[in-house]
Image (cartoon, rainbow, N blue to C red; front, side, top):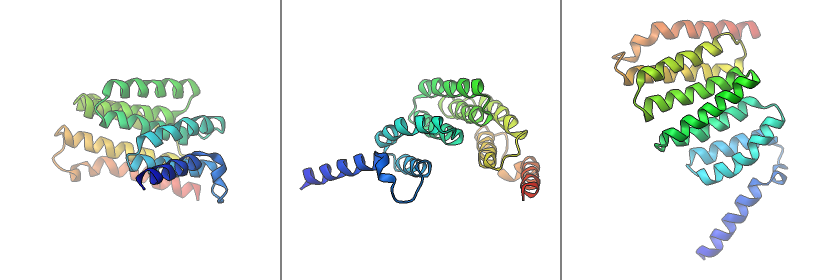
Length: 194
């Protein structure tokens, strides 16, 4: 019975990894994103890696760079929280160099966020983590693209956590003065786009 269940599960996974399984009306990018996130969130890293190896070339070939960089982000984050800091830093550096060569600020910001997480969690260097996050935030400040908003806010959230972990602020309420201009910036940006 268990052998049959494993065989069926293996078959199901194989079919799901096949692009032919996308006949349900969802697009390939949406399907990739949803399945990658599901594998990542459920700590099914072997399945995540197998799908990533197919998804990354697809994202790159179709110019879906935010998807590409975020997929790499999830992959490197596994190294950071798996105490494999050296691998995480090498991968983050690789992402940064690639994004820098291509002129992709989103990718550079993703890479810097990963470096900051590695500095903060893996190396316990909160000062270097905060400095790196400030660099990432500065990259996105000149962009008014709404798709950057989520990353921009996430960078600030990570900065708040980093500062609290290094005891720079005793409570999140003390951070409100520094976050308020960010919210106003994006509120006015979204108003202009409507």
